[in-house]
Image (cartoon, rainbow, N blue to C red; front, side, top):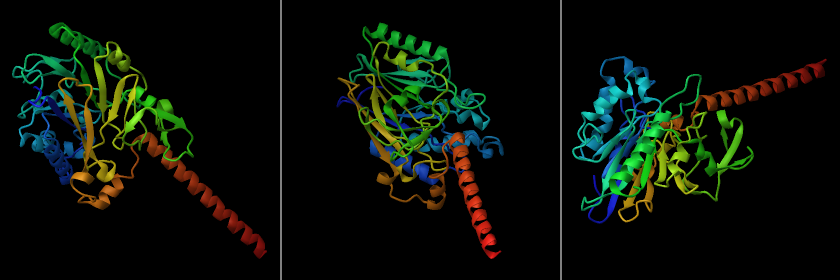
Length: 378
């Protein structure tokens, strides 16, 4: 894995495909068009490749492997290397992440510790947690590191798990190993599924009457936020930032020596904003899949271009379905529904309560009007 002769290295970030055995053709079309537009040197998948809670994965044996092979076809057919970590829904398919990783390893182009072919790869404590060193064009030195962190899954009782402390400890060891091997800190970028709590530092607390305000839940229950104009650079904020209830101090670890210059995640399908917090870029890539909720034709993949002389001075852009394919998906009515359903259980409960309150008030109003007319008739 190395930079090109022109001194650039290209990554395409794809997240939240969340597909079922009957893979949506729009999902595959978006992936193909994005791959052809970006022509990446590496594709990074950051979890929820599968809509694991779909009952369709349990109807017939082999559905998980069949679906993984189907969604990986656009990458494999183009001969592009890829790296995979996991989200909170993959393991719900009935197959563990370890078992799923074995499927990925058997797909041509998979980059991991067992299939390294001489690449500089440092393996972590869990499947889906590892680092890949990217060398300069002459292959005389490593100039950038790409870290994938398995941000784990749902927590018992609701919400999401934090990183295991041993993962943070592993990152520090990998960082120091790179430094010892190469005589200097190696700048790195982190990809994972679930955002860190510090993503809230890119937001500004407001009230629900503010235009564009988004209601948040759990650790930020009944609060409203907009993007902080002094911290964010681009993108949109359309759903609550869903973070673990506890903080694994991952952010502080990344800032400890200053080697990590950016963290990008998925998980919150409609968000695409990027900003800077304490010298560290925090960014989103929106969902790619059309068999789960998303931001309509703004579903996208994210392209990165890194420069050998200064990887931290990277360029990034969204490659949306709207720009690459067109303004209407092949199944617009279904997509309209997916574009408007609640993102989380907490959001769904809040909307139901609001609906019931509105309905209750409406019924009470009708009854009051009827009572007035009855009295008038008397």
